[in-house]
Amino acid sequence: MKSFLVLISVFLFSVTTYSQSFYKVSGKIFDANTLQPLQGASVFAQNTTIGTASDAQGNFTLYLPNGGYDLVITFTGYKTDTKRVTTGDEINKNIEIHLSQKEKEMADVTIVANSEVKDGWEKYGNFFLEEFIGKSSNSKNCTIKNPEALKFYFSKRKNRLKVLASEPLQIENKSLGYDITYTLDSFTHEYNSEISLYTGYPLFSEIPTTDSLQKEQWAKARTKAYLGSTLHFMRSVYQQSLKEEGFEIQFLVKTNDKQMAIPLKNEYAALHYEKDDSTHTVEILPNQLDVGVIYTKEKPSENYLKLNTGEPSDFQFSVLSFLPEQSIIIEQNGYYYEQNELSISGYWAWSKIADMVPYDYMPTK
Image (cartoon, rainbow, N blue to C red; front, side, top):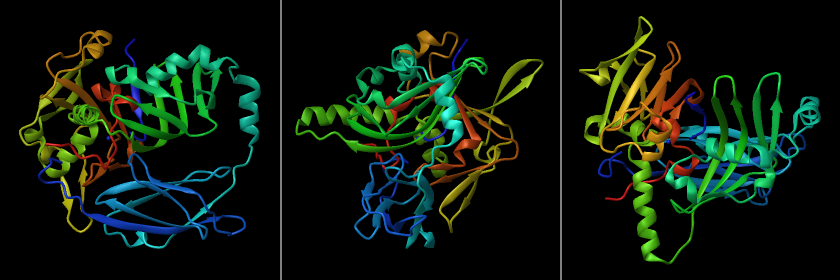
């Protein structure tokens, strides 16, 4: 059975039109119980290279490229908190974050007692890497440096694998030149449906190097990973540059147990494209729930075609599945929400952590 992947995270403009203007986000972090400021809390815009730590008074300041982000706040022993920020929003100033300490719930104790797999990494490690890191050529040079942080739980009754992490995963991607600190919320795989789902908060940093040839290789690899990606697509929708960037969209409709692809004469009208200049956002609500996305400027990888026989070989094909009457909002940097209301399958589901570039990535000419 073909594997199907739903991503919530995470995980994804043309060079001449994307503006690198910045806006300021600042605030203070407190203990929710004592109201004392927390020093050293990690604050970062998820899926970017931008982060900082709170000072002795709990204060933090970030400067973000225009667009939208999930601001992630973590502190050892406390529950992770998130807050959405966007360009020009007044709540970006003097944000107060109150973190609550983690409590050991009885449900967690039950899970550990009944379903933890003691040799989980040996039994499920390779499977987890394929579903989380990926199977692409980039994944071969992508390593989790602290696999001991992973805990594996298997439910026979539900036929489901659940993976948690006791600390942020430290991922080294030598293919793209990134170190990634990934705060894994959870990973689940339903064996009955072959659906994997994971949520978490990645923070990127560039691997330092003085080797000019290595820098050039990483730049080319990042551009290749970006082109045709979900991030590239969302930026192209925002800029109304789908055709110029190599994207075509179709509506997928089921008739008599068969799926038909309907080409669109005016894709922006079919998407109900509406731009709000006051908030610098775009809202789309397609006429059909399933939207096929074709990227014509690059063929699928050979590894993908070997594992997905019957898929088109001349172009990359992905599917976006919307919830009934639920639109999504796209920010100018390609961030979109609500991300848990949009399912992704096809080629984009093949591209996992090893092929991710951050939201503040800009392709070079």
